[in-house]
Each structure stands twice: as C-alpha cells, then as structure tokens.
Length: 128
Image (cartoon, rainbow, N blue to C red; front, side, top):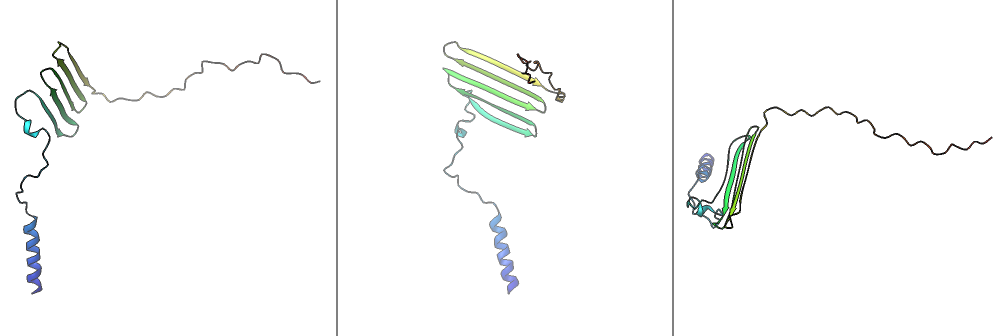
C-alpha cells in the first residue's frame, strides 16, 4: 500500500512539472507592439558569443532623430553616431578601434628631482 501511495505522489509531481500554456499576463514588453512597423525607428541588442556584441537604436521622429550603433568582436570596436533635425542640422561620428597587440605597462622609473635643497641665507651663530 505504501509503494502505491509513493508511486502516486511521484507521478503527480512529474506531471505537474511539465510546462503548460498560460494566458499572457498584464505585463507587456515596452515597444514590442511597434517592432517591425517599417517606420525606420528601432532598438536592438545582440550578444551571439563571449566578447562579441552588437547594440543599436534609432529614435526620434521626422523633425529630430538620432541613431547610434556599437559593436565589439574580440579586440575590434566600432561605433557610429548620427543625428539630424528639421532645421538642416546633422552630424556623424565614426570610430573604429583595432587593438591586436597586448598592451604592456612601461617600467616605472623614479623621476629625478628638479629642485635642490635650499641653502641657508645666514651662517649659524658661533658660541665661543
């Protein structure tokens, strides 16, 4: 009888551990409903492997917008920043750093003092 009860309890535990579909809760991801609307504005991040990532966004509207993109793969870093507004203001910055060699800290050398001790302006009194 005890084996039958133990088997029943284990069977209920295993069945209750299986995933079940659930109704979506009230918490929604911000901006998820606007993804893929082809309006030209986006936000994303991608981390496919260690020491590798991509991150970027384009936000704003037709009057004023900003776009930023960063990526890193091992020792290579790339960044792009662009902005524009309705008053013909615009700008772009591009950075591309490639650090292949390992950096070695230079050996510390004690600096030579650039001053000399002050010489007394008077001679010490003599007591005779």
